[in-house]
Image (tube, rainbow, N blue to C red; front, side, top):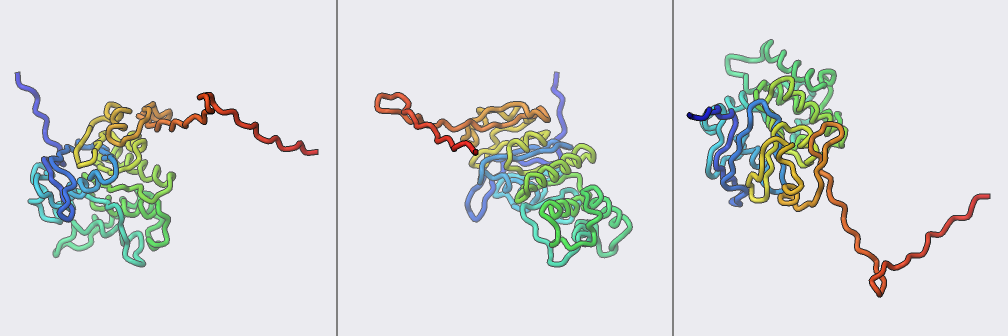
Length: 292
């Protein structure tokens, strides 16, 4: 009896060797991105998380191995064709000075423009819908430079959405945002995945945010090796966190979502012992005089 052969996901990497300036970041790196998942990549600093995302987006050419998109090597596609299938939100984005929100989001339609097909009603609809879904439609006429960090991040996400790609890659989308704006952006990404059916891949640093939002978790260790991947509830263990990050911890259930919540172990404070090993007595704290 033969087993059932599952179709390959539309985005995957096989046996990658990734380098920066002749420095090898990862070797033998392979990963499958489940279709229609919210996949989050986590790992210690400099382990290759963003490097992997750049390779998946064809921004970095592997020294060895291959990235596949929709069944073909991503290197075989023309740049414009990749941009119709896959959208990328880089780690740091800079808008041209003075550009308005509407004009920046409209740049997401570039992959759909051709010599004989300029701006169309379809483009206009895509831009308006992207701004509506990210909550920035009322900001369309404002300069991007005048916006808060959270607003700007939603505008960049709107530009990526205007590409109308089935796959979205987000490189540390919460960097430099306060906690309220981090949750705002991640809630939006989760909505795009759950309600719109996008395959979302994000690099995050916060393990608890990763476990709360991910449907599929990829944990990388130093040297660019995937230490574990799968459902956060089965992947995130205290042993894994200590092994990969060197951090003793406990894993408990998040009281809001039931997802894994990592609680770092409290540091052990040395005992201030006396000469015979007994704890040294300390003087009581001074009591302030009562107010008369």
